[in-house]
Length: 443
Image: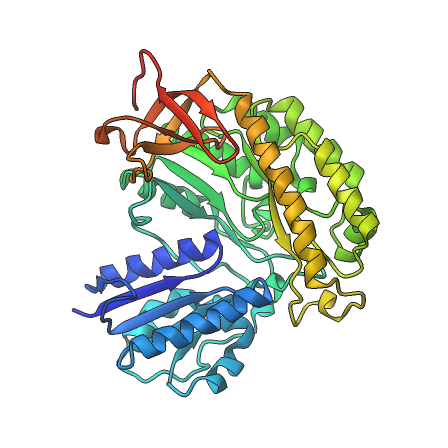
């Protein structure tokens, strides 16, 4: 029985794909172990969304090669796709390098007795026509499973390497999505995060062979109605892809949770144009207003990229002012990272690191204020909470409300992986506490 260790860096799509690898290895009779234990095969699913993520991927690869000198090392993911030949030259130890377009062959390749040709599975990603079919049996011990429905991106924003590592947008056919959702439900998962690289493009590539309308809205409608006992969250979606139809479905369908994650990146129109984001700050604010009007209780998280080349103090102030006025819940703030291979890496007027750090700090302060203000709105109210498998450091149960408020509360272990009604009793920017609501019925 071969022992397999998998190390995963990066996004929810990588998490899903690593879960698929685990399912494949287990079906082949292998035993999964921690990367800290002795292993026969070590799989490293890498990330390179920023220069620092690429550096972290290199570090983990070297570290695990030293830790497992006799193991077969298999490297996949976005760093492997972007720098496969460089990686083959960088490391003295023979490794299997598997590009993103060939992940469905990873388990078979890893278990093969044939030595790996370092670049044997490295098709140019921009030629990719279909999504890799990677079924998952169980999403680890988590209450919440990631349901990957789409891969790739067509946008080519000037700061982003992802289209060059994931290729064009490809969707998993709806019947395959529903099959995977049914597996997760049968395995006991109570909530699924519908995820992809650019989920809002779902269905657009499926073409005339599909007889019925298939887009992101129809996808969510079918999932929610086919699995009424499962809570569904939609992962990051572009502002121009948030329609009245989508928001109406979220407002009407109880198991389509009121939670939106929307990338803004900059609140200044000059910077948005240099980024090739395809919308203006005014259009973004109109979208947020529509979200708040149609789904009053929605958690709205916003991505912001600070210190893009040419971002002056005035440009940053425009972003800060917009975010102060924006009725959102939280900010996910990232400093711009000069990523080789992107157009923005060659732009002049790169912003000094100290300036980026100061701007990030200001926005993180605003994030704390936004969170506390949103949480305070629900003080004394009761919300449904999916109780996680692990307790917090104080021994309390923990979980997220439907509108993504993290809450801790005392309770029995039998409540884990059930949906409990919790009354919020105290709030700060970092901690929310509650108690089981009167007449509570866990589900």
